[in-house]
Image (cartoon, rainbow, N blue to C red; front, side, top):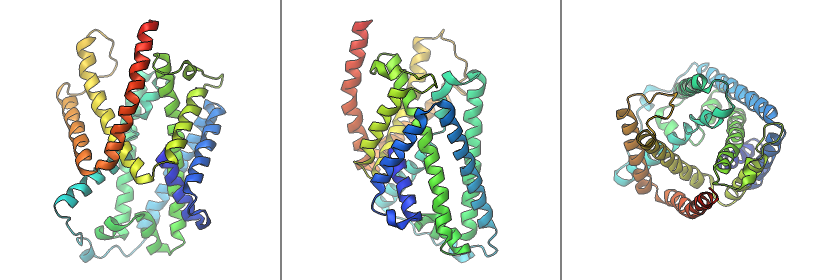
Length: 336
């Protein structure tokens, strides 16, 4: 949620230029605001999330319709004016693109973190994962088709905010502000999801003896309060230390690492605990999960080689955190 808060600050500065240069302060204020909102109770935070999600989808749909209302598509001769990058620069560009794509779809598994609070998770969880991915793919394809209706691929490739450039061509410069509003709503929606998700990770770790016991405290309104504010405090520190690009690509590296570990855990647990109840099927096991495992490993290597700085930063964070995890595990073993 840290880099998302920074991005929200940048979008607010696009809407109100007077806020430019204060992105870190805005990020801090947003993290505190959403932490306070989530402290009110699960119903309040759920209602906020549903409202933000509805606004986000509605505004993206309006953006698509507005772009397709343009009756003069990008000229054909401009459609192929994309210059090929050479050698190492091309490899770096591909790696950064893969990190961007990975983070865009990085929340597809978020429903898993709420499985204990979900009615009939054996049935609803797989559906939420599948339907969620299908809806997101449809939205992204529609938005990209709309942008390509207005902009040539070369223009799309060089634009920092393609939707703003597309609508500005159709409706003039004021349309950039409208796009910034759409981007802001989409960003704060994800911030709220992260604010819901992170405390539940700390709650699970606390219940397993791998985090402070206060992490398991839940209010009558269903809020893991200590975990909520501890995760918010961590996000505040990170948001005020790193820049958006560094944090974003470092998070992509950690996500790829998470996929690698989850894939490996599937094989390990099936070997260690063959009789364990498994309500979900692993399609194509062991070949499909094995392929996913190999691809995650390849991505990690490519990220280190192609975008070393953020990747090494992510490795350093894990290296620093591991002794704390090891200590907590030893304490749990002694307590047991």
